[in-house]
Amino acid sequence: MLWRHGQTTWNVEHRFQGQTDIPLDGTGEVQAEQAARRLATLRPDVIFSSDLTRAQQTAAPLARLTGLPVTLDKDLRERFGGDWEGLADAEIRERYPAERATWNPPNGELTLAVADRVAGVLARVADSLGDGQLAVVVSHGAALRLGMERILGILVADTPILGGLTNCSWSVLELRRSRWRLQEYNAGSLPDPVVIGDDQ
Figure 1 (tube, rainbow, N blue to C red):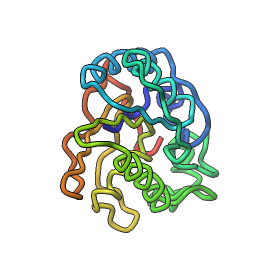
Figure 2 (figure 1 turned 60 degrees about the horizontal axis):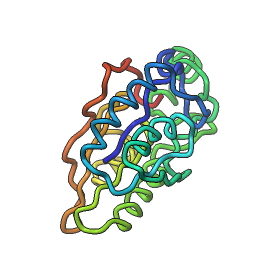
Figure 3 (figure 1 turned 90 degrees about the vertical axis):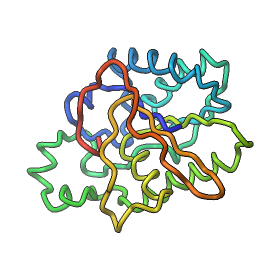
């Protein structure tokens, strides 16, 4: 199960967060608490998280409810945004129209590099599980979406296929007979999240 972090002030302001370490805002904390109550009923076996604060804060209520430790992995971080970090989407569109069209930030991390990095983590997590075990992986919108696309084999060049993930939503991947399947996508966030741009 892949779980995007809760809302931050930069999400509300449509700012590109990337690897800037922004905490959850009040709404994000409520989202994480409410989602954790639902996810705890699935009895996960392990929890992995990006080491950025907003992901750790999202994982914390689930860890408390289940008694599970959270394993931090820096490879679950969001895409590094280079010159875009901290800029509002309107500023990015104005200053970097060509790069914005392909979502490859100047001096930042390329789409295919993010996809490979996160897919690698997902494969490692899957390899660590026994039959029937469930892992919850807490990360970021672009990182999770691109990692899913890569591991499912649907990332074409650097053009994303799946839509953006809302704050505190989750998606379910299953590995069966050495094949990945997407069982659920962008589900379950509570309360209604603020809709944001693709890679923020």
